[in-house]
Image (cartoon, rainbow, N blue to C red):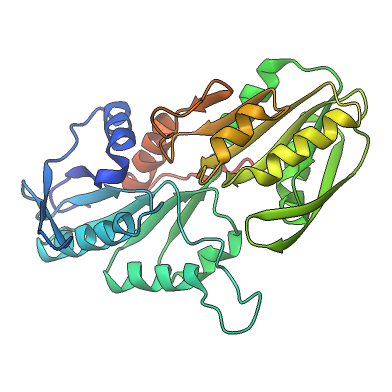
Length: 314
């Protein structure tokens, strides 16, 4: 039993837009909090209402700047010191997830460090979506609920009613995801192979599978500089594809990403709202799907100790 049977939602500044939508879907008011900022850039979050004995859900994606991550850590610490019963970090986009291993000498494993920081702040549980690497769940010694955007993307793809549909993985790492969609949609799969000379810069691209005469859906967990996804689209159109659409849970979209997408052969880019799109950018090719109802449903099941296995489409 919960000591006070209270559940409270709070938002970090970076993800307030999504937290408000989740709270509305959950039929609860978003909790009151504020942040004191000092002239040197230091800041201090504060809960402006009691959280004593409550199960507290703190909603914050950890996309850049690093302030978003540190604000989440400070809010977890503040909730613990204010005697919250349980603290759940809802992290729609888990930043630093690409640093999940040592892929060259003398580098950090940032995802493990972030996991350690969250545990050191005494969070009780983490809820996140579409981790860059599934094994990051093993970096935590607390429960991690990992949900997938496939529960949003699959109905969207089915509603497109595309003939000659093929599912494409942008690289070998995405083959498992693409294979799951391929089986559910009963569509053939294409695997793209890319090579890089440095981070965020694709030098060459090839496709394994039938491309000509196909309507292609490319699946990824995130779009960063959009170099890979736009090269794939342009290459596939040149090889005779009828259309290319990109689906990615997290629109990181750094550097020239918006311009590249606008100028590419991509028909459409479907993302979720785990990261807000840049204001005043060209978003004419974008379609943003809300994750609010999905997160509200999972939070309700977590709070009431219900099973969430039905959301594991993949």
